[in-house]
Image (cartoon, rainbow, N blue to C red; front, top):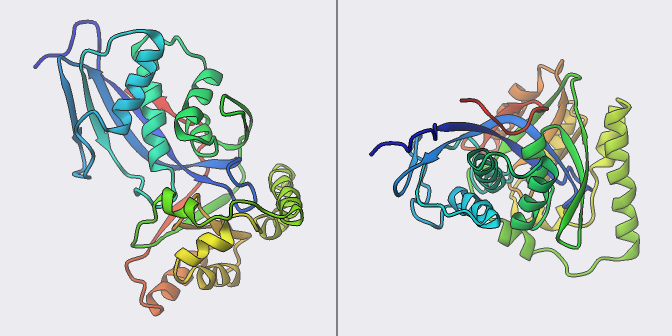
Length: 305
């Protein structure tokens, strides 16, 4: 098979994301320096493969492909064929935005192939409409730490903070999956006015504290009553990991996205956190749990080739 003339292959880099950040349920999210890569080019048929042997759908149900087709359909353009090659470094169904990476990678690549008919704000809106909430897709596209409000399922109002100060984000990744569907099904249908007020104050405190470098506020700012208490029941040892994170000097610890990944915000000068957490996990018989040291990605999704 040969690629179509004047339609070169493109390679897209998409960052992992960590959503909610404690109290900011479905509204706060950040991008980190762990990346998926998607190579795509027009082809005479649909051909999907994995560069790292991760099992991905190879038919029209593939989320990258459906996102590409969604954008082509919006433009009224036929999608005659496509060759997609995925490199999946972001753990799947672990609360690190693997699905959002597929959506953003597909939309971004399609927009490039189409000649750029959609601007950034339009891509943010389209991605949130596909995902159903903006707290992963928006930072995956834009990078940085994003605060977003999704208005009536149509338009996303967002702000982005770029963080250059020395903060590490340690992802403690369990050796089991937790689907977003299951993690959402455990949540209550309604919440009290008191709990809503509790979360609003802390979500606002989180963003302001990062901006003003008041990291001592973060441990309180990630406290939550809307989702974490319910999801942590699905994540064995989560309370113990949080306690150990604090004992090792982290600024804060929270459930990343729908879980089961547990994220700690740590000073880059704290060199005891990772070995201390590794020793703790091994002692608890959790040798299969991974620790990934991450930092903020401020660039977001872009073409690398």
